[in-house]
Image: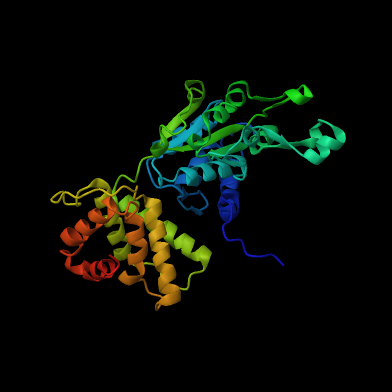
Length: 360
């Protein structure tokens, strides 16, 4: 009996769209790609196919950003998606890998503890002791597997990886080969291989990329949503999708609730109300679109399991306060000021004002 999956990979969740795109796609495809660059862009940005099939947008933003990212992957240069937390870098990288390779699972998660073996290869020590160094005793990394199969490898949070470990990628990206000196051998990348890395602007100065490594990436900056409407649509789409996946027994959030939350996040991020009339203290957190989605989902879970299934201000208050207050002193002052000077004065927000004030 198959157990339900909490979160499907992109190529699983959107399998029907990828199949339909493949049928309609008659344009040239780079070696080993499942779809042409045009079809990959349609998969990412959404559109209507000639047979009337609707492809849902996965990324809402400037088309140029997506086209540059796809064009980069069709060359021999790796792609670095750079931006502040919550700008859909991981989301976009996963879907790019799914559409080009049909496989988004060749992933290295960067942390301060990531070792060189994680990027290159390791060893099965039982076999190594019994047989000595051999290909069968070698444990390939996701990057090595991507090289052997001509697929896309993903490296998340590249700047969280120690600088000396990062540089293990230089030979892979420049020579398209991975030496195995213990066996006097190497792995040469098949056509279609490439790397998508992500990095946060907030991590600059932690483990900066060496100039040699940076030159081997084409950097694409992912901005925060440009307009209010764009951000509200992203929050609506993702909240509804996550709610369906989690099977929350709650009504989808009303558009007004989404707009209210997006307004709060944008005003606190910008340090000014949307009408430009009131300056505000800016909290230390990023208050990203991803955090807004998380706040809404937390509120829906509260409404579903401890309320009447309809999202109310009391359901949102705790998660919203936690999203804003990261540093207890600076952020608490900024949040209190915002509640008193902005939220309290907006008549239709009285319920949210009371619910949030009770938590302070």
